[in-house]
Length: 238
Image (cartoon, rainbow, N blue to C red; front, top):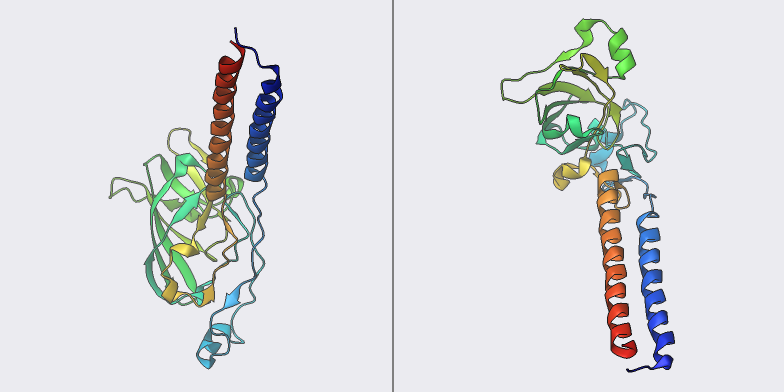
């Protein structure tokens, strides 16, 4: 029987080091920074941009937004990108109200959109909370258009990269559910933007995916450490 007592400290040090590395990676996964740089107007010295910053433009909240879907993102208002029609990405706060397609129009200082969800489970949406929807007159409910085989709704938004409530009425449950929606400005063509988007903000989904990847790496390190520890013991103690 082979026995090398002096190998034990090395094996234990290796094991502890791998566990420590895994722990650090998990901590990093849950401490991803959520700070964002302030909004920057493109070519702000260019007189041609004066139309976007005119005295008649409404007062805007330019603070970074943190919510259930986004963090550190600056709202992008109608004057912050060219008028026109766009296909943009949108996310909601519920997997049961998954937005699979969005056609957005920026015109006359208003952002309108047709969102398509992945089912026909909802008969109406209401731009507000579920409680507000239940108390509102039915004429304010936005009916679904199911001609495409999916539920489609025409809604408006104050800005992109800014969450807003949009309650949805379940056909099956016959009740309103709170939902939040955000249109992502990063899905706009860069040449149509009048501002530089912050590189430090993002969606909670992106953060969660990054955290999951880090945790997977940490688990792989822990498993690798266990395997190495097994073979070290087998080699020197059996």
